[in-house]
Length: 446
Ligand SMILES: Nc1ncnc2c1ncn2[C@@H]1O[C@H](COP(=O)(O)OP(=O)(O)OP(=O)(O)O)[C@@H](O)[C@H]1O
Ligand SMILES: [Mg+2]
Image (cartoon, rainbow, N blue to C red; front, side, top):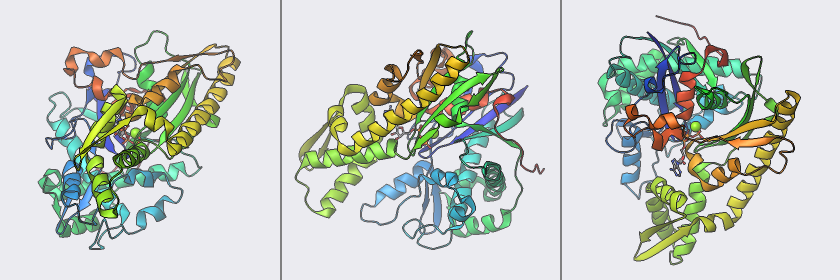
């Protein structure tokens, strides 16, 4: 049987999922395979931290990179994170060829492109390991896809070629670097440099591109008798919040381009706002050094802090003999947050407006709203998709659950549902029919 695998290379986390290639026609939820990319013991097994750390003589990936970066509070060295955002800049070629900042690469040995290729070789190795451990996937015929934000410029085909080339070099690099690329100790600097030089221009693999919003629409409509013909997707990840609207015309789901908005504020931005609120609440930290230490401590467990805050409305942290409390209400009162919330509502209403007009023109009165990404857990995102938009006019907006009922199937042992919104794009990308693919190709090379 042939399978389709989709990689979602995110700002904070990379994810991947596989599904039988005929899943769209014959959906069986139990056959969906989110891949356990993270085997470093800590963190969720489905979420691979998108991080690289250039150490004195080695390069570390994922959890190990973050642990190393956090191990020395006095160090000015940082792990490279959020490098995915680089892939969506206008002049991609130039952005990739700049050297990494000294705080990331004190040896001045690597360009941004090098570090992304190295990370992708780690990601590719994690995918290969997960496939190898799965009796049904190993040896099966696998079609590869990756998810990315929709192109904003006419240069999209070029970006696709660049990205598939990077994946091709990463695959060749993985084979060259061998087992080290998966080890917590990482790969030696010289081996990395030599590997990069030897694999440059290795040829692009055959890969399909699916736009992130389309992938979200695919998972949310699969297996439904009357799948929505018109929907709006809000994807709040770590790096960006993306709003997109889709409409089915002639059985094919397409994006309504006027509706698309990308906000540069998402999870990472919220983290900063929360840390500042907590810092103010502490009130006793006056020196820059004390504040930096507080910042480091709260950031180290921000995910847990935010999870508690969003789930219960409040969270607390002990620092320097004081207990600092933050409530969702404090967040909602914050000036920066309010600016973001205003922009978010504006962007959502703009999407609703375009979707409303299209739905009415197509003779429909109902549209669906769906939140995906880690931000789907945030109370303000839930409220956004659940309340009636001011400009809904004659249409009814129905919120779909972020986690579909089938994610609770016994086959997943309770592991999938809690992180489903973060895996939604990878899963949707694997389930989507060929007709939803935005680009394919690359130069296949054996
Ligand atoms: N249960 C939760 N409660 C609060 N925040 C959460 C929860 N789960 C995840 N997050 C946050 O979601 C963000 C990560 O989401 P996601 O994996 O969708 O991002 P990404 O795909 O890496 O980023 P992007 O889509 O912007 O490239 C992080 O900021 C994380 O702290
Ligand atoms: Mg994402």
